[in-house]
Length: 375
Image (cartoon, rainbow, N blue to C red):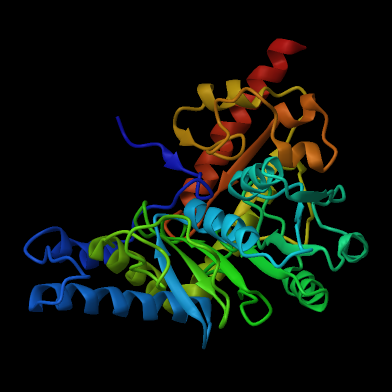
C-alpha cells in the first residue's frame, strides 16, 4: 500500500535529505560530547557552532544570542516563566492573544496560577488582533507580551513588529512564537526580545528548537545543572540534532523564494478545486501553506477517517484527541458545529501539484458522500 499524500505540514514537515546527511556523522563515529575539552569534544562543539550560525542566518538576526533547546515548547516555557521570574517589582502581568499556541497560553495560565496577572486579548473574525485593543491593554505593570507570527491552525499572520514596538514603548519584553513563519516570512527580530523556533517545522529533526535572545535579555533558567547554552540553559546538546537543524535552516534560506512560489501555486490549485468550502481566517493576511476551510454539514473527524489516502487534520496536532473544538476557531467566532466541519490542509516544499490535485479530489468526493447520505 502506497503512503498517503501528506498534507499536514503544520504538524511536522518531511525531513530534508540534506538535514539527514548532516546528522549522520554525529550518530556514528563522531559521538563526542560538545561540552568536553578534548579534540573529539571540540569537533562536536564546532559542528554545533556552525549550526547556530546557520539558524541565526535564517532568522536574519545580526546580533543577540541563539540558544538551542529541545523544541519550541521548551523555548516558549523558558521565555515566559523565565521572564516572569526576573520581572521587576510592579511588573507582574502577561499580555497575550487568544489564538496563541498552547505552549504559550498554558504556560501563561501556569504563571497566573502562581500569582501573576494575565490578559488574553480576543481577535476578529479574520483571526487578526486589533492593535487598538493591544494598546489599551498595555501599561507599566506589563512584564511580557507574547504574539505568534503565523498561527499554526489557520495560518493568519499577526502584525508582530507593530505589537513589539507597543510592548517596548511600555517597557515590556516581547516574545514571538515564530515556529510556523520561521524560514518562510521575515522574522521581526529587531523589534522582539525573544523568538521561539522549531527544527521539525522547516524540514529539520524533531527534538530540536531554539530561543533567540536580544542583547541584554536573559530569562531565568528553566532547567538547572550546567548552563551549557547561553550560560543558563542546562543539558548536553545533541550535535546531530543541531547539525540537522542548521542544515534545514541553511536550505530554507537558500530555497526561500522558490519554496514561496511553489506554495503559492499549490494554494491556487487547492482554492480553485474547493469552491464550496469557506476559508477560516483572513484571506489576505495569512501564510498560504496553511489552508483551513469548512463546509456546512461535513464531519471533519469522519472525513479524515474516510480519506485514508490523504494525511490531513482538523487542527493542531498538540490538541488532537481532546474531543474539544479548536480554541482558535472558537476565538474567531465559529460555532462548535462550524469548527467540527473544518479541516486544515498544510503543504510545502515536497508537495507536488499532482498530489494537491489528487488529494482535493479525494476529499471532495468523501465530503459529497457524507452530504448525500445526510440529505
